[in-house]
Image 1 (cartoon, rainbow, N blue to C red):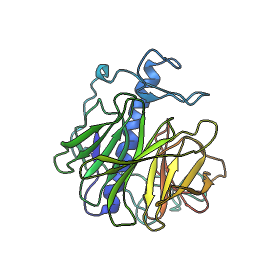
Image 2: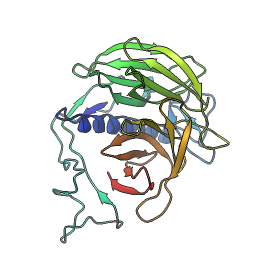
Image 3: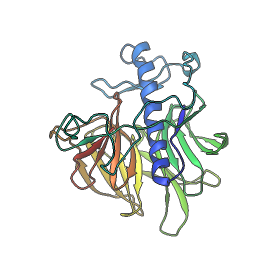
Image 4: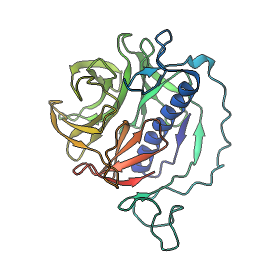
Amino acid sequence: SFRLFGRERLRKFRLVCFVCAAFSLIAAAVTAFVVLKGKDQGTNPMALSKGSDNEKNADNAGEEEEIPLPMIGQSNDVPLDFSGEGTNEAEGEGGEPEGEAGGSTKQYEVLDMVGHDKTSFTQGLSYGSDGFLYETTGLNGKSKIRRINPTTFEVELSRDISSQYFGEGSTFYTDKDGNDRIIHITWKSQTGFIYDPTTLEQLSLFTYTTTTPKNQGWGITYDDNNQEFIVSDGSQYLYFWDRDTLAEKRRITVTRSDGTEQDELNELEMIDGLVCCNIWYSDEIICVNPQTGISEKEI
């Protein structure tokens, strides 16, 4: 389900979109992990199952067990706070967060929950400056791009992606001519698309590379201040692409506060100057410095 965290400020709403997409992926992974034993090529891929070959497998979404949603308002979580001030459940008596030195651990508060199409394997979710939510979904033959009303959460427009592509992350941005656009990447095809958000018409197609030999695409977000895209591929690297040319400008290695490298970087969101990354097969989100790659905040 989508989880709506409030609309007071665009920053918090975008964080909500990110957390929703991340937790939707985690829920799909748990279902696949229980049902699937290794790679099953006889079924449609529906959730990432990362063994030694980083394969994505799927369970039948239509046979997924119904899980009741909690009632709205039932939450004891601590509000998310990126200011470094306020309370923190992880803090000890001295006021310092427990755990690894150098980073801080934050929680979040669920304010609302709404229904979501459980047949949609959410891969990308972003909040456009035009006021709409944009979702891209995965699976070969089932991948879509959708525009969603953020008030009613009704799907207002949906377009299918060619069955040869397994859709992955996407993000809303404004191009050099001031036009609103959506960029969308795919899992193993090394192919991406640019869409008009008004019509969801595909405007262009491009190719890319990430970490050889797989050259996969997982998550993508946009840094408006530096006019660049930030891309993940499941490795320990984040890739920075020029907005206009889509050429790779640089890449960084992501490390936790204890200095260990962190791979399985998945869904991404740019928040308050940090790149927040969902860790696949984990309930953690780490927010890293885009220059150093070091995790500075963790959820």
